[in-house]
Length: 550
Ligand code: TEU
Ligand code: CA
Image (tube, rainbow, N blue to C red; front, top):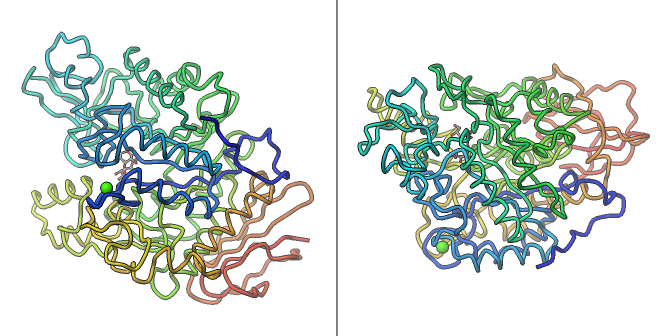
């Protein structure tokens, strides 16, 4: 199979790393398209939508896990790293999907989940079988657990009856943590990565990769002993040497890193260090958390600008940012930082404009390009996600009432992101002909792809134009970034500069008309805007506009 180079304008030099001018589209396979009527999205479903993705203009697709899994955490608990879960299809289906993407000039990024496996992975089945099994040391076993807590509620340790010892699981008890101190574990992971690259994939999104190095003493305390642990850089450099170096094409690598600091991110993404191309940081999606994620508070715009502005500045010289509002773990951005009522479309476009005009690689999560919203999540039966279900169980055990817990989880539950993709207004939203594994959002009668694809005023058409703009304007990829109006709580404003070229980006984060005063600025052509004829100095509700400065 040969990779067709995505066609790109001559203005973007071919020596540049392709992922800098790319837009990546994330697919959560379970919720994207069901081809065989079992209510679960699958690979053939995705293959059937490739022309939609090509029309949108994205350069690469990141697939959330499709490997065999007991689906305790929807595939982030893998029991076989080199297979396809029968619910999603076969390796032949996979090859067909990959070929279909490449034929349309798009690349494929796989999800790499190697902080932990499923407890049903043969490695763990062996490891738990006896104290002297050769794979015993592939996981973290202790006679006495420490005080670490699972990210999915409760202790991070589970007693295994067979040997009377506890194993570490930072996520669910069906996700035991691999022991990266053991070189055999690392070699097995690298061999598996090479296997996928040899099959033709173009990159990896690395799940919670900054949790793989733990202080081997496992002291009490928690995150400070396993987030960005002592051997992180060593492991990533080793991975680069063993897997990525010497390939005839550049592989995109993005490390998901909750809790990563800017200084660490600069090291991880410094090309000279040969670690990663970019990281997913979490600061901006934590700004509306209170004591925890299920205690949300309103976003203050100046906090968002302070945070994203600091990341832009911090990775300006060395390193590279990833840009995202949404993924399969986050609530829908239009419901979160926008207005999913009267101004749903306008605010979806404004949020897209602001994000995509930053310096970095933008990620679009399925349905974001339609302005999909949070789900109603009315009763506990509407939830499927283990994080929500465990949180509910723990809260009820502590005396809370289900109705109160549901109200608490509604805005932030990961299920908001996971309702089926809204293809059309039909009963299964065009996602399935069966009962979907998670109910479709009732607003699919209004919010769906079919109604948007030929409408030039739709959110979908706007995303298309925005993506096209990145491909034709080198300043969006390479320009410097300067934040303006840092203390303004209504307007997001910044400039980009490349040589003598300059852009001004303005976004109104409110439902009111706002007057903007920017002295010493002369605007020229409008590159893109959410309203037909923008007036400089006045922003209508949720309006965004990008000007070329003259
Ligand atoms: O997520 C890890 C992570 O840091 C969070 O976003 C996580 O979703 C947590 O619940 C926040 O409250 C990754 C995957 O993206 C997620 O889907 C998996 O459940 C998790 O790792 C474990 O593999
Ligand atoms: Ca299916």
